[in-house]
Length: 117
Image (cartoon, rainbow, N blue to C red; front, top):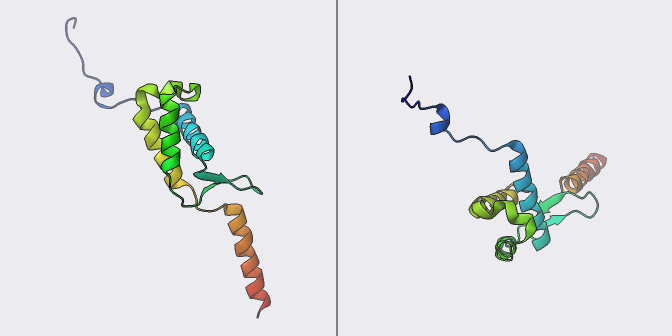
């Protein structure tokens, strides 16, 4: 068998990213979006939400951090586009409101409407 090369599944399918590595990317992107003011944090419940403003400042800040060689982005220099994609994903998947505040409002509306009858 010497001299033969074998094709394995790994040749055709890239190894999936570890959960820990993906989690670090998500946390980094969320921190950048919060620092830029694109994502907000509820002052009462501390939940992160996106209030539908222009997401551009988050991308500008991340590109500036890459340009300035910020230490928090050092592990992503070779895959800058991936981190920008994750930033886009984090913003798109964020709720447009604090779910705890919204739940309180809905509960209040339900209580009020049941009292009206």
